[in-house]
Length: 279
Image (tube, rainbow, N blue to C red; front, side, top):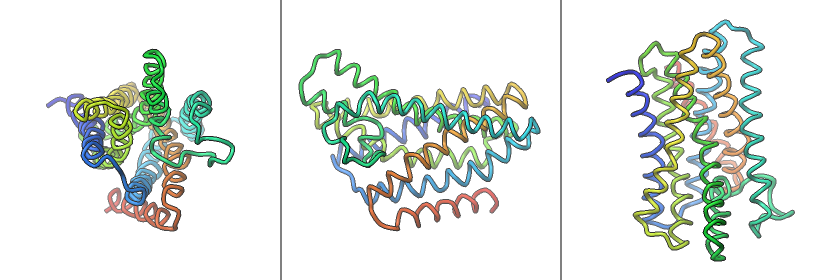
């Protein structure tokens, strides 16, 4: 199997099957446990943080393009994902009744993270097909904003491993697959509660993982251009993931389950990441 075929298959499993499995679990149970989801997210966030800081960023520095280029590409990754999320939030939040001045200044539920609550609001009010289409497109964009950089981290890591599926790339693929399970649950449950059949909801949910594959191909392609491309790809993907971890996953995990356990789970994830990378 060729390099690109292996990469696509790996990220397909992590993105599409991981999200689809979450959608299937959501369809069967039609509920989720805030405690379980919180600890799973925070642990995955911790491992991702280790891989980004101790592997991907180090590899970006080792391209010897220049430390300021590495820092700039990381900053750009953070800024781009933040701005795109801000634009989507500013458009959708006023249309959801429970998000008001008393609401935390971050997402406190997976439905909010991917804007499934916005889609459900339109569906429950039996709004026009165009309004539903726009709400669905917004939800797809919100999911893509998380899945594309996740895929880029796999692709960039793969590009830096000399044509072999390196340990970091494989670990990232497994972790992203696990991380996508609760996201898949958050997609399928509101779709089913809004009247969609379980089978169709699971298929739609699985399809929402496709941007992971797109991101992986983009990250790998940039990494193959040369040292500068690899540095930019690793840096941008790392910055995007740092924002997702610190700006969304960890705050949300702590709000979803208000205790110190999400913090300990994240620390355990960081230590597990160190063991995986250097063990």
